[in-house]
Image (tube, rainbow, N blue to C red; front, top):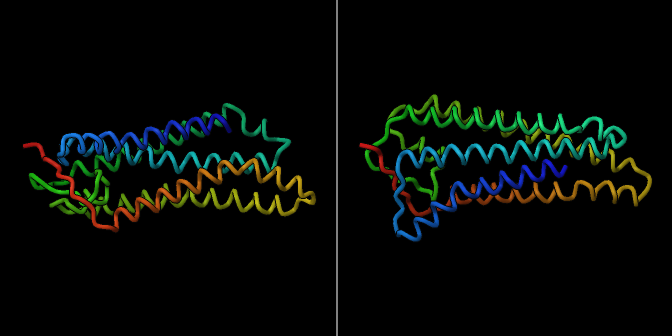
Length: 217
């Protein structure tokens, strides 16, 4: 559990670092411009670490499921090798997805100077600003969200449904409290992540200042 928490903490730090330094630099220089290469780079790492957040929360939900529903077999099932493999597979999957999305954007054509209606280079906003056909990009983007977002969400919901059924079946109130307390930290992290996703969604819906993207000549 602590190995997964440390990885999630590292990913959250990296996730924040994809947008905050550039935003602070914009405030310092009073300029909202970003180069084309810088925009693609920021988008790549944003997609990467956002996906890793979701995958690690899913792995942690499975960890809590094993700890509560199969406590006697926890150390056997959630051994260091399996934990390392799950984290490694999460990294590989998110790296490949982020790389695919970024390469798809590189195939698009843009005007020399465009403005993004957001404070960072978000994938959907960039695709909408393209001058060329974006049908294939839209398909890949929605498939990525559906598979890499819906799959982990289903895993989290399934794990916690089994946990709730297991806790409900306990006869001891003290046992129920102890079992629930073991997954309280993950519930807090999941709630924080959901709140952050809602905040990002509101940021997309509300009018924001435009960031200028400079295309290379």
